[in-house]
Length: 90
Image (cartoon, rainbow, N blue to C red):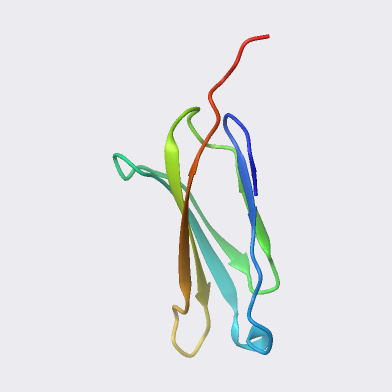
């Protein structure tokens, strides 16, 4: 994971043997206090990373990655909490 003042890049893995069942991933960045959705993306099932550049410096975010397939629609969900860095002057 890489975090800057306004952006975040995350990556994930898929359990071996489950790759063929996943059609897409839904990735959602949400501010922790206020539940403001910064961004939501639907990515192909072959994708293993996502980036947003819509973060507010110094705010904490939950990032949720949910696998989606055509049989059950929504699969496993994982959420992590991250704080974007404060802007600094040089």
